[in-house]
Image 1 (cartoon, one colour):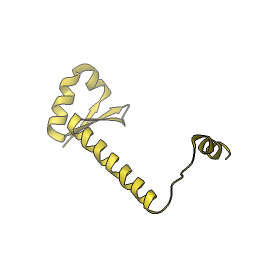
Image 2 (cartoon, one colour):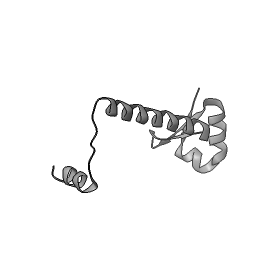
Image 3 (spheres, one colour):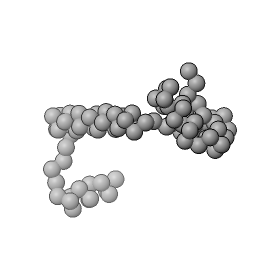
Image 4 (tube, helix red, strand yellow):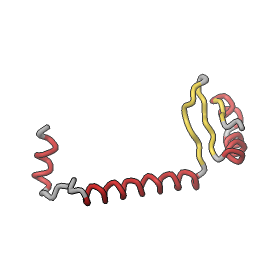
Amino acid sequence: MNNTITANELKTKGVTIIDEVTSRNNEAIITVRGKNKYVVLSIEEYSQLREYELEAAIKESEEDIKNGRIYDESIDDHMKRITSV
């Protein structure tokens, strides 16, 4: 189950190699000089990851509200608080 594509393969084969690898593995890792550098995902996979990320942010915000970790202040007061550190 090889899901890596070298930078040289990408240069010579273009999108064809990305399609080939992602159809087998749902993702492709692009290597540059032997090191993993980029990940290519289908738009569906990317959208799902973004949805999970946003759900986690909402949950974290709800926990902050529930536990009183919020500020109710004016913009001026907010700017003073964050710039006085």
